[in-house]
Image (cartoon, rainbow, N blue to C red; front, side, top):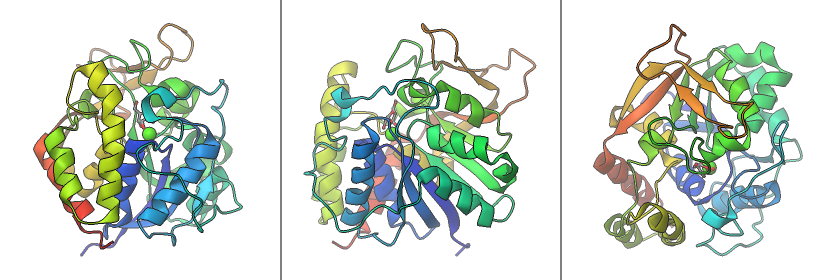
Length: 315
Ligand code: RIB
Ligand code: CA
């Protein structure tokens, strides 16, 4: 087997972040250096508790856990309890796990991990607002060459927005952070609503997950039952789009996705279109591509992979 890929995961759990973590935390393909929480779906106090609970459910309390930024770089925090519930992971009961957060801040952890990495070594997976990643880049730009790739969930182009007509939530919450990340000149693989809306959950897929006899799969099914309700109403679909697991699915099985090198800019001035990601999909400008934009996915293959990985848990 190839050497395990060193990975930092930054997220704002969120039920879909939780399924992303479930896919990552038992994957032998990854050497997960740490998980950092960021304010997003719910405040940092909640996302920081949620990464502890989710690591505990997966019995991966060996992975260091950190709290990162409590608000965007220069904006007031916007949260999404109306989608994810008050806890952010409604569907599972909250509890106080033994595993604690590290003292070090999430941003300092990212900087320290990059300092210790070789050039082109570290993969960063980001599935919340990009505040932590952007602050690390801003505070330590000399470390950017250590980043192998950034695999992020965010943005929208042909699909339109989910928090405003123009913007996807993660980018809307902290557009300035997105601007810093888009300018880092490292490989970026971006999974926006154009692709995540093609992996809508469904009753048969949730039933298949619930049949898997372990606690992690049961927690996944319980969270999906809750998470599906809002988006099912909104989109008239059977279930919700599984946004964040697309990042890990791509790292595990890139052939599931169709990607295109595009130039991408983000709106930071207009209030109407704040957070809009202008993805030059048809190359109508002469701007150099700075991202790989995901635009299609093998839905059945994605859900098969999710189920296969959930079934690997023993408890
Ligand atoms: O717009 C969807 C994204 O915003 C997902 O990452 C979801 O968890 C929220 O963070
Ligand atoms: Ca998220």
